[in-house]
Length: 390
Image (tube, rainbow, N blue to C red):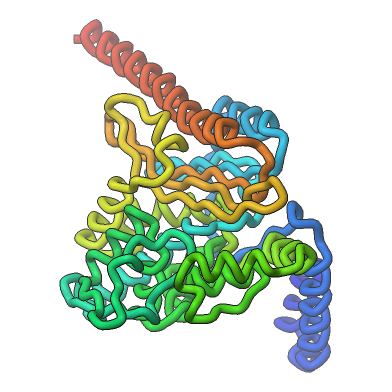
């Protein structure tokens, strides 16, 4: 279908009189694409959100074959659909398996909310130390420690900086949703993603909207009290929950590709998305993340550091949805790798999930040790030849 579309565009450029016909055919093809997406199996969905970046005239560097082979083996060994991507930040190569497929992000999408907030700070639309008042209407769903500090009689006064800390370090849903409100809504976050030229990442809305819809409900303010939300969800017929979850998995509004995530994280690390101060602040918060201690972080070797964000979706019928960990893994010599490990839906227990993610981090560390040793040996040989020549 893509090839047909390109031929139509070629006709459009060469034959101005064919504009009407070409536009009609493009519209028809777009409709067929939407129909096929709605009827495709979840593991075959692969879409991209964001503006297309200009095509480069030189190909991207090839990923190391040995690392690629290890990642393929790790992915196939898990036994369920997973997406893995590793991008070397300075050299630009990407090793991945199912890297172009779409997976639900869950709380990983908080990264793009934070990016939008920091962009607003860079532009002077927001100030980190400005305070906002959070009332009962700011409660969200699931994990939201801030909600316990909200009182109807006395709003919670909190700064934008602290909201970011709660969203990225604690993965607080109420903090994230209030940040979306402060920046101007989900559509503003989407515009930020597009303006940065990022592909393969998206934000589906506030956590309370995405999570209630995934459960088969529509958001109501009273759902901000966790037990009321869980009670309403439990009262739904199983068929309703089945359909809602199937719809979410087929085309997750918060979907992203592993390749898209590591490309965005690498650009963030290189300072291409935000000012130096905002870049350091955001990555610093990711370094302090307290979630997912047994995921990527458990495999970080001495001398290495990890700045990351996890995502964890709901459990239903013995399976878990959206189990993810993404981040920036930095070696002792400062060389940094962007990582994304994403699981769409799994019946494997926590230990298997942790083993998968830790395996990816260890594979990157092993690759670095081998390449670092090779570089040192090459340097020693070069210095030896220089001394002989002298």
